[in-house]
Amino acid sequence: MDISIAIPLFNEAESLPELTGWIERVMQEHGLSYEVILVDDGSTDDSWLVIQALCAKNDNIKGIKFQRNYGKSAGLYEAFKAASGQVVITMDADLQDSPDEIPALRQMILEEGYDLVSGWKKKRYDNALTKNIPSKFFNAVTRSMSGIKLHDFNCGLKAYRLQVVKGIEVYGEMHRYIPVLAKWAGFRKIGEKVVEHRARKYGVSKFGWNRFVNGFLDLLSISFVGKFSKRPMHFFGLWGSLCFLAGFGMAVYLLASKIIDPAFSITNRPAFYLSLTSVVLGMQLFLAGYIGELIARNSSTRNQYLLESKIGL
Image (cartoon, rainbow, N blue to C red; front, side, top):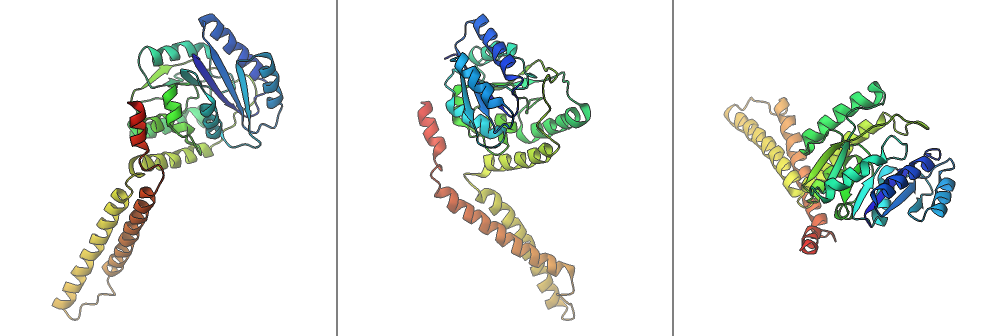
């Protein structure tokens, strides 16, 4: 199969017939075999009934239904599991992403050798205060922390080589950081394409301000896990050792001062409490690293990167 199109959705009943019809026209014009995987993330409107009707009408459309709302990442995870196309396209169901972009995205994967191509909505039709400005700040922070030079990490329109979606696990709210996940999984050739962004035609946005706070916390989490999941002692041990040595050094200074001047009061000095706190914190960090190492070494996935390398050969 040429293309799998993964579309997670929540309360998008009005847009689905138009979206799937548009996709069908594009695929027929370019002579591409395809499947559309619609994942209903616990919609409370008639989305699932519409999906059932579309599946009955078109064999290329498949539906997956969640009993409740689990979030976009869960929808993408299930769609990636079901996908079998040579290239996997993700897009939103609200008609703000144009299916006309799909052939060019596929070409960049197959002919230019990219593992992942992310859309860049250079000209947006969203509210500047609630979406555009916060999105620019979020993207700038993510670029700085991840080292991936993309303008729009959270664009729903992306193209992947099939091996990429099978080699990463999207969970929580990590759909914002799929390029980062792909990079940590060893897929280094990540590109970008300017895509059309359309004004919302039906319904309202399903995301609020909390996505920016959650997004930043998720970025910290994924950056840490990507670097230290196999070697947690390298992080906790380093900072634990520094804290312990700093506290121990202050304790030696206080003890030496007491020996030189018997009238010197150790417990009345702020350095005493700083020393005590640093030593205790250092020991706790070191123990956290030790426990992390025990967990990592006994994990069933501790050598997963070796298995993936063998499969690649």
